[in-house]
Length: 417
Image 1 (cartoon, one colour):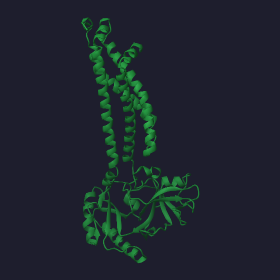
Image 2 (cartoon, rainbow, N blue to C red; image 1 turned 90 degrees about the vertical axis):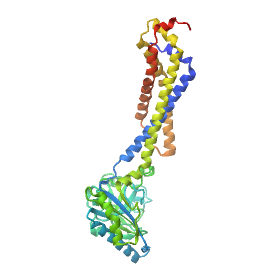
Image 3 (cartoon, one colour; image 1 turned 180 degrees about the vertical axis):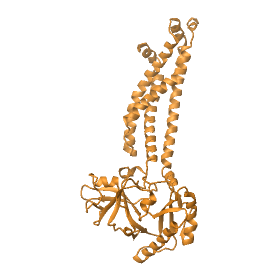
Image 4 (cartoon, helix red, strand yellow; image 1 turned 90 degrees about the horizontal axis):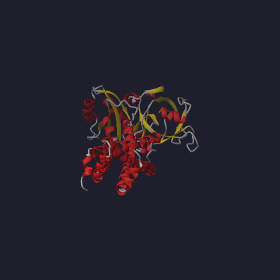
């Protein structure tokens, strides 16, 4: 079977060939990029936070009529209220551990800054972006973080400070990612760093394996794992508590929190969203990503279906037009398999032209998305897989009309036109 007769036949149907080739090219370009976006979203949704997420929940509340926290006396009053809450929560029968905190991974409420090995953050080298977490000596235990080097905080390390106080602590924990960023030799333990350009040195007393930042947007991709943990109870007119329930007692512990806190001090606000499991926090954080992946998946299926339908329709039309010619070929000795292979090769030729154009469009679309939407460069593997997919789709779509063509009997050649 030669290609010459196919090209001659296709020249008589230029409009149809161009339309199908363009449809295949557009489908390839859009589907490759859509599948790449879906892959990125799935990877983001499934990435670990570093926490032991099971049996973990967050309590957020606001005081009513509490001091403003603008002076030392009011700060201590706020701290007393917070310590009373911590004691109340730790006394609950279904609670295993509690820590005050300013945020959690995926909460989209973050304190971000910079860490440097230089006292002057403007000096070149040694700078890294970081997110700050505040907690007490129970922070690692409650969140289920894994300490890989050094030691944890103890009760004597923990201080309290007002919401607007910018002083930095003398000791901190960092994630291994941040430690390795600042000290590439892997010797961050015991080293001094400076936070937010402060002249106060902070000594790294321990490293945790992983702790994701609270934000989930693309703008944090450069420092997703760069977290700094400070031994601080933050005093303000609101507070957050991370709570670990006893194994299998999550729902019971969550139900106990609100009445217990109101009993300890009714001058507060706790609404329906004040007590939230980490599973719900994760679900809310990635709702847009899951929705985007589902939408892209539907778009891909629709495009592939429309392209397949177009190939089926055009091939069926061509079979109808060539009915007598097929009969003549059968009368001259062509087998059913020869007719079937002819239409399959013809479709492969058209799909190949469309795939070549689609590769260029896919790369161009990816570059456009990179420029305007902070998308990563699409690996070549996605394009190659897309080419294989559209070629296989074309062969699958053409099979039914090509099989009908192969069943045309030789007697058709003897009938009058």
